[in-house]
Image (cartoon, rainbow, N blue to C red; front, side, top):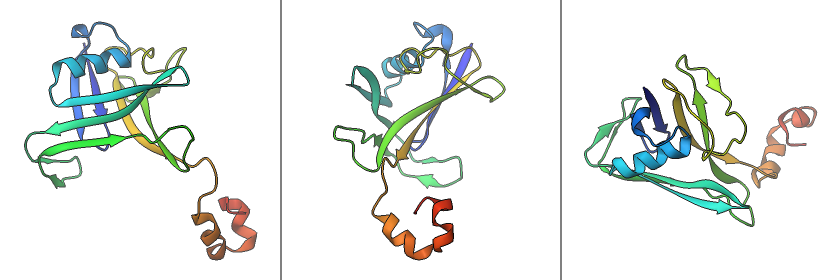
Length: 158
């Protein structure tokens, strides 16, 4: 009864025996890892009444090779979200997705909060930090000069 758990960007991949976790939500898996893996670290905050992941940190005690073959030095690797009030533009936020044993993404049933989304044996949990623009950025003015007027609407710089 294992599930795969990974955090993109901090080079963390592990297998978790779901029978050892006291529950089967994404949040309970993370609490289990926090208690049992001294190299796994995460923080969460409450924002508008919802618990959201604030950061992930992974200690790599020895040098390692990433999945693309690039070597990295030992050390603590940490990424944090920037979703705050007032909301900056752009901002970054942690996002997770679930996939079944065949690699097909699965929507969480009911509440999409990581504290309530349930996983099943053989599934995988992947966390990644995504950047979101909530308004045009300063680059938009420069892009207008590079895109022909008749194509501006098609690429979103009109």
